[in-house]
Image 1 (tube, rainbow, N blue to C red):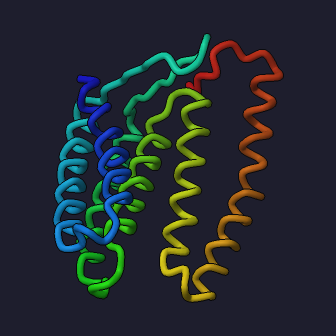
Image 2 (cartoon, rainbow, N blue to C red):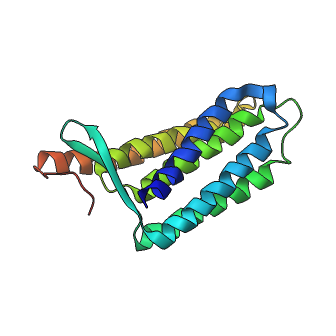
Length: 187
């Protein structure tokens, strides 16, 4: 049942990338498309929470990318998907006609996809990559209305704060690698 897990991850990441790049050309369709993707992701999250799938694929030479849904991540995948759907439905009515909805909905789906990878990752390299995508999407979402100086400043403060806090995560990863941990698995 690893197809459900790959769908859970790939759908928000892929759809988010496409929507983020559409620009204002499809502004009217974007909220419906984003919400539809979020509904399917929620369905996949519920299916993954019930079936508890696991999957892995080669990442780099000697390293694999592992994903799995266990007891805690089963709760988290459903929570992330449900909150994403709620945010996108609420956001559908929050934009002026000239604003780029595609960028916002795409970034939200990218953030959610990265969060889903983060909560299901079973290997350290995959966790770190998803963490970085999540941080970049978070920065872009906070600074979404960047023409307002306070929004851009808030995004920069959040970015610098999370970068400083990430040092502990990277020190732990470096210690794991330096300590000769064989597989970099998180279990």
